[in-house]
Amino acid sequence: MDILQIQSLTVGYGAKAVLENISLTAKEGEFISVVAPNGTGKTTLLKTIAGVLLPINGSIHLNGKNLSSYSRRELARQIAVVGADILAPGYDALQMVLMGRFPHSSRFSGPSANDHAIVEAAMEDVDIWHKRRCQYSELSQGERQKVIIARALAQQPQLLLLDEPTAHLDIANQFAILQLIKQAALQTEMAVIAVIHDINLALEFSTKLLFVKNSQVLAYGNPEKVATTANLKELYGMDFTLYHDAAATYVRPNLKKEDE
Amino acid sequence: MKLLIQKPVIFISLSAMLLAIIAIYMLTIGTASIPVHTVLSIILEKLLGIHNQDIPTTQQTIVWNFRGQRIALAMIVGSGLAVSGTCFQTMFKNPLADPFILGVSSGAALGASIAIVTGRTDCMIVLAFTGAILSLAMVYFLGQQSMHNSSDQQLLLAGIACGAMLNAMLSALMALNSQQMQMIVFWLMGSLTNYVDTLMPVFVIVSIGVMVVMLFARDLDVMALGDEDARFLGVDVDKVKPLLLIVTSLMTGACVSVSGIIGFIGLIVPHIVRKIVGTTHLVILPLSAIFGAIFLLLADGLTRMVPLMSGIPVGVVTALFGSPFFLYILYATGRRLR
Image (cartoon, rainbow over all chains, first blue to last red):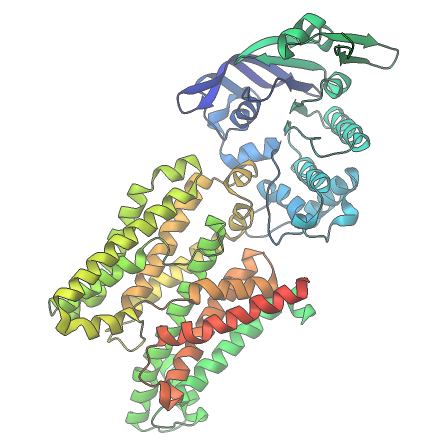
């Protein structure tokens, strides 16, 4: 079933469009990566899908209903966002992840035992439970990123939006976290839309790729169809070579030799 | 101490008891010394109708009408300002935000001063409250855009600019009416001795305000992360924030209109409470209310107990003792962090 349907969407701030005519659908268990050079409005797209920004044009449907018909609380029960690094003076890691249960719990009672269990599981999954008593602001950037990912998982969303989720993680953690998210997507029938800069990570985990260039969709679909040398050259303005082996497909830019 | 912090209900209850004890003690002191048991008898009789000893009417009038009103006013104003301060600091993510930051105080001061210079001191509270509300309306109207583009800076700047303009008007008014300057200055310094017919309006506004803010305690926890994250987590910031701003500003306006400008409570009480009990607003808000009340009661008590300070307005005392205490807290926390 389609969790998210986007048709002819134009996003931007005010009347100024930064990304135009996007159409995509996200089904249960799908992992869609948005790949684009810097400053192409990827974050704006995620914020619009999250309902924080209004679309300039086009429509967004979540589970068949227009996004604007949901209240903020209802949206937060179904969409979780891992955004830019935030400051949170005074909160420890556990409190931060518990906030993921805010849209699910009552205004008066606070988090229940079940909420605590969900939070513990999410923190264990991303391997940050041992830091639960540490001040969030005193954790390293990578640890903070794990906390925010745990918070998003604790939200138990149907749609997970990730804005460069692995930007501050080392290579082992990059793979571990994305693998975890992909597994969670399959197990909990969640759809994932991730803005990812590392094309090889995108190739490794995505079921669909969305290439964006000059405010327009350059290519959208299965990774084999989208990640072609022609599209990559168009996207980044340089030549790439695609390598295939039994485990994966990966790309490498063709660097000019020094003696040339 | 650690146990108390982990069990906030116990901590809040003990603090409330401390407040009650201080309030009762404050009823006993003054020019006429009235023993505690007499004070308690008067309270029981007035509140619950339990009559257990004959007390002279003069003592009843002193305790219930004179001291009682002053002490109730101190508690209401202290609570209202401290809760508003907590709310402002969280919503603006700014440790310097206090209840007066949106220009409420300047509007109220101008209103009160107009009442003084036109000789209508009987309308002072009404005019001060009107001034507070009008200045707020102006700040919101001019800073309105900020509600939508998630930049609080514009609202704060509008507040500061409006405050500066109203202060300039106030100065002009004082310069043109120098014979009443002393009365205006005294009002500006904050006092609990202004004549108030009934405390009911300010009591009702502050009580409802504190309750509304408490309803949004968990939203405030999330809003401390910033507007955008709060939206991601399900807080309807575009509705909750204006609502809380209006509620807290009404509280502040009501407090200022009866007591003048009592600074520092809204700034330092929330900070002290946060340093003791952490960041959960369900705990910080009631404790801010209680400690705001205690702080203002003690400051007022000093002006009544220490002969040297008897002529000093309570607003001066709060700043005089509040700021060094606050500096000490900052220093002690800094040392602990090192």
